[in-house]
Length: 239
Image 1 (cartoon, rainbow, N blue to C red):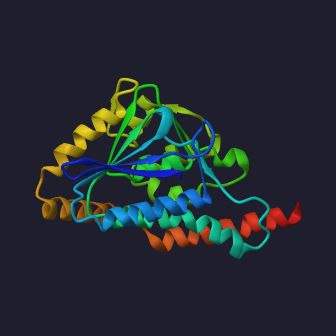
Image 2 (image 1 turned 30 degrees about the vertical axis):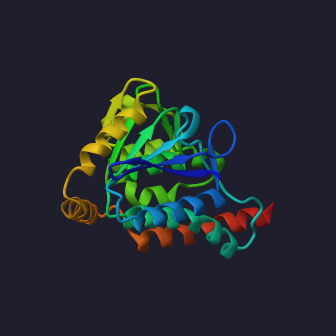
């Protein structure tokens, strides 16, 4: 199972991304499982705060999509797994804290950006490598500009370069940096503090804050999938 949920007590749970291979890649099925896990958390009446982390000091090396799809509808179905995760994440009424060690690439980068609070180890590394594979990261762009100025986000996407935790913090992607190996411990501390607040007040704060910041746009996300689906299907068919 690539997605693991564990209750920590006092209203705090942890979702661990236990993906594929050493880099902790997530395949389409893994993303669907993650969306299901987030939806399950949303129905947990005792949950007050949620932490997302990765296994073996590796947050997430990115998404691995299905190969060789030549119909836009097939590509869209594959990409829609990302939208299901993002929608389920946004629908939660509890704060979500990321605990990042190792790499946060592609999908991992996007997950770190769109949670409510992001803690990363000082030696964590972040990247949007999609363009190096000929894939524009349009879905990430639907919310990334809420945190990062357009020119910086465009540069990160078009170069696919790796950035250190300090630069990610300065760019607005992270909330705080901790020593290597301490991200989960710190995230649990933050989750415990948030879980102690009145749940209705916290839920209202999260919902209103995310709506005001326009962090989630189903319209723009669907538009991104439509554009990418046609491009990728045509490219795959040509090969």
